[in-house]
Image: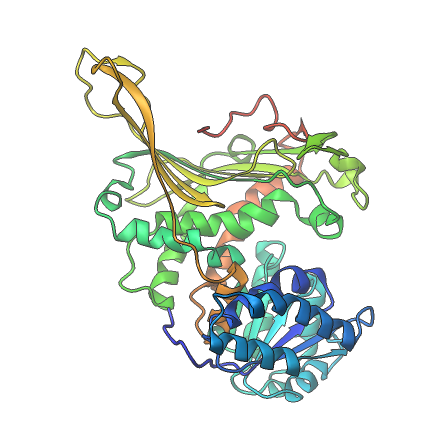
Length: 471
């Protein structure tokens, strides 16, 4: 990855959809956290959005977002300088980016090279890409596309063709902000810098791998997007498959974008459903209940939801990675909303020891390695001699907090964008492979081959489902 600390390849960040929730909630805070480090020498910021927001209101949003970083004692002097300059020079205009020639006009109105961030609904982004021509995009223009990347394998391929018609692949950043999370980046250090772990992470020693991303939050007003996506598309296809690939890759020669992303794509190409979709997948949606001390409506009763879509709020798939390292090890990916607890972790369960001498008492439990994705943690569950009786096995957990990044996840991702380093972005072939993996499941669900189970909001899922390993 780039080690630049003072200059960037991009001079202007042009945000399309700057009046929307994504920009206010994630993009601007992420940008502020990046600028505060002083790693960016100069940056122009231009927002493009709807008439619902005025130029003055956008300027106020930027100021409100940048203020905590300007006041933070950890912000460098260089960081304060660029935060102040970017805030003062930020601008906003109302435009229809789906109109022919409009994207080119916007890019030419600001200093280049320009990174164009499509913080728009996928359908609007595609219309904008279709309306643009290669001739109107100056050399060095970077296109940044927010996930979900397409809605199927076919649509992902079509979107890739639209993008590469305009700019080369090296100038396309498919953003997965999960790849900017400090814990996910720490996976690389854990995997390849520790002899205690690296040789053991294989089918010879590992019994199973689970990735769980359960939230207590319910729909939270996102029906317009979520009811067309669901947990499988929103989380498993978009994020968890990328984390799984990082956990499973063989060591790349370097952490450069080509070497690392080649290894990620290798794992995804080798990934298949463990069984037929009706056996290897499960889906459910929450009914009325209580979560985080609040009464939650059933998903089907939420405003903006079409119950006939049968959109799932909890999804689980069982996968195999068909290569020498992992053949036969089940990988289970699960994600749900309105759950009874927040669980965001990878759980690697090791096989039993080959021989345990007679004479031990207590429970010989499997060794587990847990990597938490919020908070950032590492824990190893071990059996040791208990107090009082040296032959009785007791369970202990050895844990540590992992180092956090100085930036928010979107800050990490934007740093790669501004430096022209796509390491933390998803490559075209990887994006397509993720859809290829889940498409049989989507087909089976649409055909009604997998029942839509139910679980009360605030519970741990349907009673009939096996629970992920608990602490």
